[in-house]
Every structure is written in structure tokens, then in C-alpha cells.
Amino acid sequence: MASEVEYESILCVKPDVIVYRIPPRASNRGYRAADWKLDTPDWTGRLRITAKGKVAYIKLEDKVSGELFAQAPVNEYPGIAVETVSDSSRYFVLRIQDDNGRSAFIGVGFGDRGDSFDFNVALQDHFKWVKQENEIKSSQAADSGPKLDLGFKEGQTITLNIGQGKKRDKPRPQSSGGLGLLPPPPGGKIAPPPSSNHNTVQPSGGAQTECLLELDSSNSNTVVQSNPSSDLWGDFSSSASSVPPSAPCQEPSSGNWVQF
Image 1 (cartoon, helix red, strand yellow):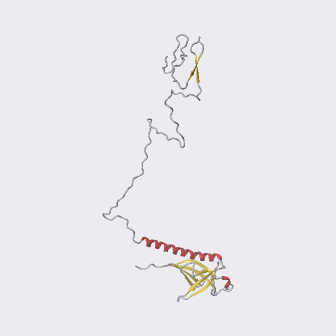
Image 2 (tube, one colour):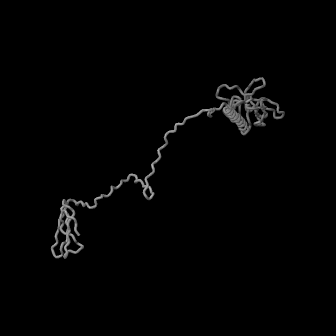
């Protein structure tokens, strides 16, 4: 199977770029454009960024003939191949290489700040695409691996122990009319049922109760005092001539039923 052919694509072209010969870095604090001879550049020409596969190439070419002056292969960004300076956003440090593998560091700058912005964005977009491609390939490699077989083999069985389910709620009792009884209100008290003995009369405060009965219209009135300890039933005999039917009460006698 033949290997895939890699084509070279152009990412960015800037017609004006300035090249400086820079002194070696003396400390780890980074490069400074103020240390360069900005008034006397060493070379001017055109900058072109191309990509072949995952590697980007920064090429410095002649404006007229297009002859290659130097190129810097970039495998990652940001990285050692392209570094920014600490005192300006329009200048960068490139590590250029020749065909024999020798490398050197030079300074490049742009007269317009927009050109330096496009240069930076073109490199960022390319390596963002490279990162996405690597993630896609790694996910495809994981999917192509052996998958876990969770299917049943021939003749294989399983046993399920099903526990008791939840108890069902008992149906509420219903009245003859088909309507359910409502539960008592929360926090309320149920009143006691009424007494079945309707004939019991309790004396009030232990005081004797006086009953005024009119026995005869011609005789004097008789006041009968009831004893709380005696029987409450009395014998009321009516007079045939003098007592009207509306008042048949007479002096009570204990132990007899009422006669009408």
C-alpha cells in the first residue's frame, strides 16, 4: 500500500519583513528587541508560511526572484523554533536551518502590527488543527481495539433472585353509599360519643331542687322538696274534678310507676 502523498499548502504571505542579526542570549530572561540594531536591518524581503503534513515552514524569500534566503521548520508552536520578544509584539526570534542541519537564531520584525498578528494566528491555527487530528486518530485507534463481548454463550443461563415487592396499600373502607370515610384532621381530637342513659339527671351543686305542683285549684299550694338520694320516679295521680288534664302531677311516692 503506497503511503499518502503530502501536499504543501500556503498558510500566510507577508510582502515586507525585516531580518536582524541578534546577539546570543546572555540569560534566561528572554530576548529583547531593544538590544538589536533596529535602525540598520541586515536583510529585507518576503515571508511565506507553508505547511506540509504536520510541520510548518517559515520561509524568507527575495521579493523579486522568490529565491529562498532561509527557512525555519516549526514542529510546535509556541516552541523553540519561534519565540516572541519581551518588549514588543512586532518582533520574533526564528531558528533557521540549512540542508546540512546547521541552525542559527535570527530576529525578524514587521513594520505593521497587523502583519505580526496574522503571522501569529496562522501558526496557532495550524497547530490547533494538528492537535485535533491527533485526537481523532487516538480515538479511532481505541475504537478499533478488541471489544468486550457481553453476549451469552451457547447454553449459558443466569438466575435472577427477585425479592418481595413493596406491600400494597390496603383499600380504604367504604360506606354503604360508596363514599370513603375521610380521615380526621391533623392534630384534632375526636369528641366522645353521647351517653346512652338519657333518663339520668344529675343534681346541680348538691342543692335541693324544689318543685311547685298545683294539686287543686281550691286548696293551698303544696311545695314538694325532692331528695337527691330518693328515686326520681313519682306517682302522680290526677284529681277527677278539680285538677285540669294539663297538670296531672301529684306528690311523688317512691317505688311506683307514673299513672296517667
